[in-house]
Length: 275
Image (cartoon, rainbow, N blue to C red; front, side, top):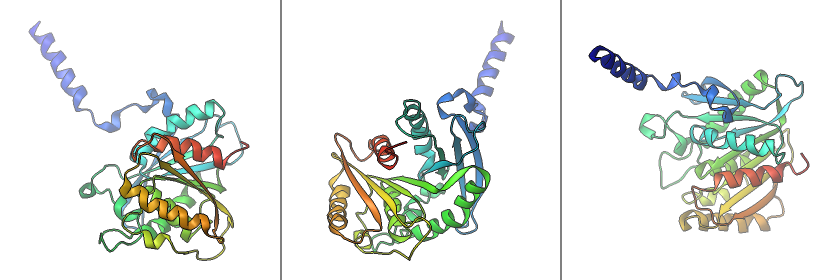
């Protein structure tokens, strides 16, 4: 009995010690068909973990698919991919490829550079301001890779970001409005660099000459985030020369952190009203 007990104890230790990569994600059926790629960026000089979800029926079809790029993919990809599959099963949103862009952790010290990559410059934070380089990584490296390997429709790219990820969605809508056909910004945080976003930065015509920008704003979002956003909304709602169609929705009852699923659903339904 003692030997058997020792074996059971050893087995438990071995099971607990298994690395995370050994988890069999096939049993998380809500994630669907997921592929992984390590993206070693020459533009930025850092690595990104890229997760690609292929829609049901992908292997049997021959057409290209709208593709949704999720910032903060380490958190939002496992949250929104099963949600997308629920909505798609209910025919609320169309078949699409989902791409999650992940740092692999949540700590700056461990390599999560979202505060740099997603932001325009700020006099309050010296490490903000890397959005231009991150945008170049997307346009020059990641988008071509995805579109060369998968049947991704380059004319219907969608980017989704929450908080400062939402800031980046607005940044790229302002600076390269044709890079993505659709932009969904959930509770975008522009509290440290609002003046940048009250100006036009369009660098000229691009492939998608007219794109769309959806803003989801939680009614219970913190004033530090909501008040700058309201100033941004007032400015661009009154502007006559917007480079995109703008839709702003108040997400009733949602806080800063609860908003992403609601922003995702409403943003996708607005972008694809007839699909």
